[in-house]
Length: 284
Image (cartoon, rainbow, N blue to C red; front, top):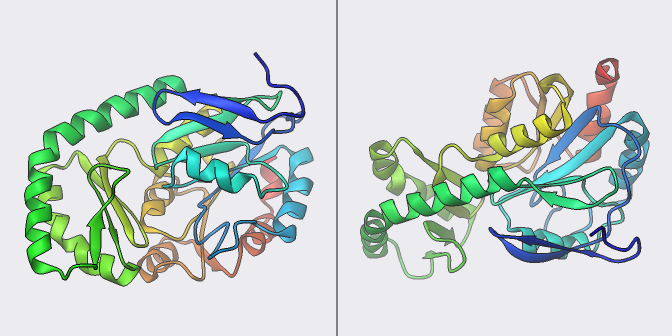
């Protein structure tokens, strides 16, 4: 049943539970191009959970041209839904935990990419069970070599840790290299002080492929912006897209972007304006 026009929508998912999403406006224009934005440190920074007037003004201008935008994040659907209550304009797609996909239809109703999400969920559970004993050994070793308070296992997500800051995570990452070498089908998803191990087939690049296929958008009409290591999968997957990072991105991410022909910008609106100034509209 379609939600009432003035009411939020409850999206029931097997993977992330029931989540209330703000009402989305219908999408009267067919999709011509996509903007994929990381959330923390890119679209929104620090305690400010609103993208700001300059961003909303640009999105309003892009919609009649067929522009659609979304958030591609490591956060859960529930966390993002809470932040969306502050938004003036809602995203058209959400990619959460670097692996689950949700999109709106032309009526503005949210739907999960059910088969993709179910396949991903099953693969992640199987990987967690297979790695559980090795993970516990690794954490025990880490506890003996790092001071208390520097890091802790995440209570919400198996096979993940949270460090006190990004610099501490820089020092912790090499600890996991032996496990990753022994299991090439396992990927590391890292954003600032957060890190999780995942099935390597599912990442910010693979979820973005699902969105692009659903709306038949080619790589040349894709804009990607992110600041964390977990954004590198999306950058690498789409070399013909417009890939960029904010100036506050991790130094290793900035180095990767610049070495692969991408750009660095002070803000999301600056990057979007540059995208169109190099005549991306010719692809519409």
